[in-house]
Length: 187
Image (cartoon, rainbow, N blue to C red):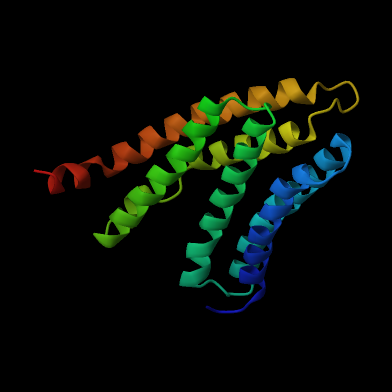
């Protein structure tokens, strides 16, 4: 495992997961719990962008980093969604759709890579839009309080529904792209 700045940022993102979840088990006022969880999630979201940018800029891309980065993202999103369901701030069905898709598409990508067809399920624009919707919804639902005149809970809930719809759309897109390989190997 290469120890470089991008990989260290990815590890830092993984280390923030217990903070996002664990803060809700501390004897703190709810507003403080929400603030800490939201701040940790936002820091993790920013490091996701920064570690990729640095890896390209410093030419420090590695196979390990390419593996660990999406794992860190999926763990952070899954942990936050489970916590939001526990707090009754997110619908369990939406969380299941998002987490289930992440597991299914990760497995699909792994399989496609093993048969030499990884490029057909490379990250697409719809996948990026799904990620933007998730990364917008989750901090709003963690914050769970008005922000000036904005109803953050309503906006976060709307963004989570959009994320779930984009999740289903992107899953269909990736399955369609992989279908020729799936079909050819299941006869």
